[in-house]
Image (cartoon, rainbow, N blue to C red; front, side, top):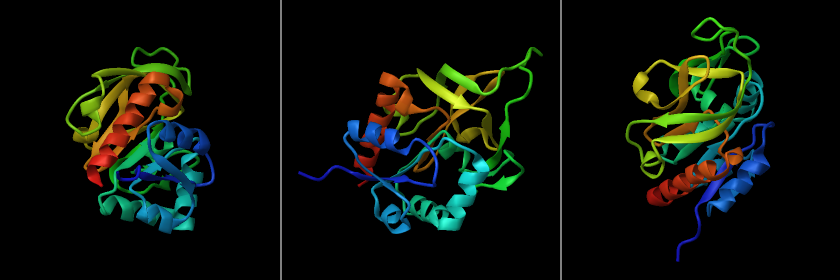
Length: 215
């Protein structure tokens, strides 16, 4: 019998790392919260969670070399799962606390929600609570998820991908925006599966199955 896949949970100095690790373990994975680039590079999969500011996280990734290790793992074909800030950091830049470069793996920027919604009414920011994500397209992750799922969100900034084809999930809050993106062995979501009860468990189960298929 083969061992369970080992997952590097990237420790960039902030975020709900332990709760993410516990949720991954419930899906049959062996998570290791790590700030060691060598551990990250040899893992079967990489999860980048996040609660915090884009600028601080991006700076930490670059200063520690973890940013390069994430890029290397993705280039080597390791399944990457980004959660909340882990989605935003994939893009070229974020505008929180000034313009800060991201990992640059996907074209687009991360911007704050507008002050008003599509109808002109004031929009409460941050976006906090349960909301429905509508999936589309083809990806190994999507094969195990329903076309519509309810997840828990907490964020004041949202990604604006430059390529529409990168978006595989959308949600409506003050207008539609990208809730999930996927390109090759990269899959990332704006919500928190570790806080999303049964729907979150389904997503992490799908990630576990995807990692197992790629080993």
